[in-house]
Image 1 (cartoon, rainbow over the protein chains, first blue to last red):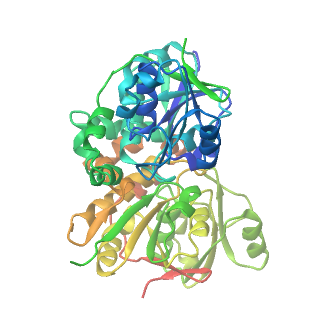
Image 2: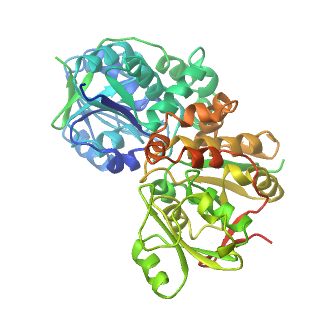
Image 3: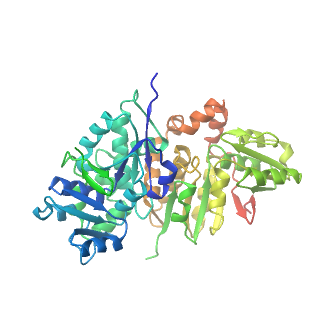
Length: 240
Length: 240
């Protein structure tokens, strides 16, 4: 009997060292809003994205003339071209360009998992394409939630649960780690109306206070694109 | 309006530094089996328990003549008096004694949270007494899951969700962090039959392979005792 592949979920970038395995594909998840925005940017024609962890690096790239998105605590930082809103990337300005992005959580998760076998970007906006692609690979899958400042968050976990649920439907191919089991139960319990749970989450409250309900709705909309961004060296590029 | 207290869940001892707050009561949870066994030991008359993180410390105490329980990977270590099974502590031998315990996960979680405002021990076997006591305190509550080697596990999360669910029923007093919300949803989804989920968990599989189904059933039995063990210096004692 062929050994089953493992689907598991790492619920915080801080836990990544505990979950790292050399042979797993890592899906980085930051639903509100970094990975949603990254998928949008590729859909609107960006050529490459350079994710950077610190504002200092972002500033350095800005000085060199790059287009740069920078966000902290839900707010676009002054002096940069974009924040973290997917809507800000729906623009002809990015077409064919290389854009640098630094965010509170998502780019930290990319940084944490940089040495994984492969790092791809997941969001509700590319979920079907992502699941279909993952199922074509013969690999363990680790769904990495960006969380909020290394804490667990609801929206990333729900998305991880949605992907886990999809993959684990093939129980001849995949088996689940405990966190994949728990998030898939969470997702099953929420999936008729994920907004119901997410509106109670701390981050949705934070964004609602910043008048970003519009962004939340967009970030929970399935399949706006079929693009899967993938990390190649320091660049995120559109998967061939 | 009085500020609400926060109930949150830290899903791995490794994440404890991210969740620490000076004023919170920490409930250490290792359902299979350390915290269940600790509650049992107090119910059977142990006077004090010294939780230690390493086998070396446990060995040192053994040399000094203490009764010592030591377990790693679900197996009682040779040369000690007890392992991690609650049944091994149902014995007159421990009455009035000080017992040293070192386990794979639970005693690591106690170690991680040692500097909290207060550390208490939770298990399904003392859940009602624990919830009632917590509700009488005017404190933030952090439910700390021991997990499995710093990974998320189902059984500790379900228990955390059960306690969170109980406390959050009073929404004039408590508000939830995202992990408390998620685990309470998990619990609500499982609570008619927690065994249903736990039997799929990796640790239950591990214990079943070790022929410890009997232990699992006991550890999921509610309210075997009204004792709440509390950390005082290096000792766990029965709360007055």
